[in-house]
Length: 320
Image (cartoon, rainbow, N blue to C red; front, side):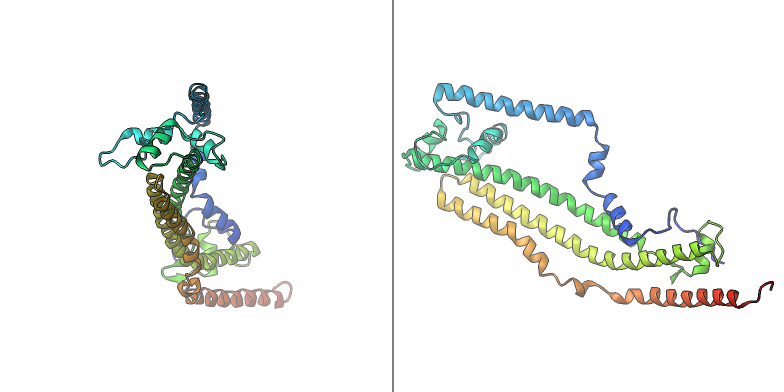
């Protein structure tokens, strides 16, 4: 008898349960489940305080400058060779104002949706003096910034999917290991190595053996398709990164409408490119079904032997 020991907890579950288990062992739930609730509450409180503070600053500015968006600066869009830390700080600090302005409708010059700094910049650099045009370009600037923030968040989520895809494939490969010394495990070895004191005529032992092989067959196929999930995750990250870069370039060129418009279109195109590329991958060409042949042959042989032994037991006269 082979003395190889099976890994702890080797008894399989139905394939759907195995899928759920593989998914739960990776992903954001580990981080959320292990995080401290008090830290989350503290961060939420700081976020609310930051939003309220920025809105109060906007209200105070509207009283003195007649514009709720007066704190917004233009230091973040002047193309300088030397990096200015204020250009990033102004954007991030006033994100709530940009978010509110992105939902405004710049349909005319009857309302002031720009700051004095933005108006002076457009007048001096682009010779734009019409308030309606200034409103349009300023609101569009905020729209691009808010869209870029969401794209960056999406990029971070997709980057987290890459190691998750690797871990999921590793888990399925582990579940597909149903061989002992290079051969598919037989029922006799399964019953002996289970540690359950099962006999070969125990129906529960046969049921668990059947599920063990079935889960292994399922995992052998999923472990192959999981490789495509890794490729798809990497393509998603690459396309999303290109989309973020084009949106950032368009934001830097917000006062040049045509240049900025081309950047937005390219970013939009890359954002839609990844799903189309994923649908073009012929999944069936990457699945090798022949890996199931040894499992099917072994199970058919073991099933025949198992049923034959039960038939012989039933055919024996009572008392023998």
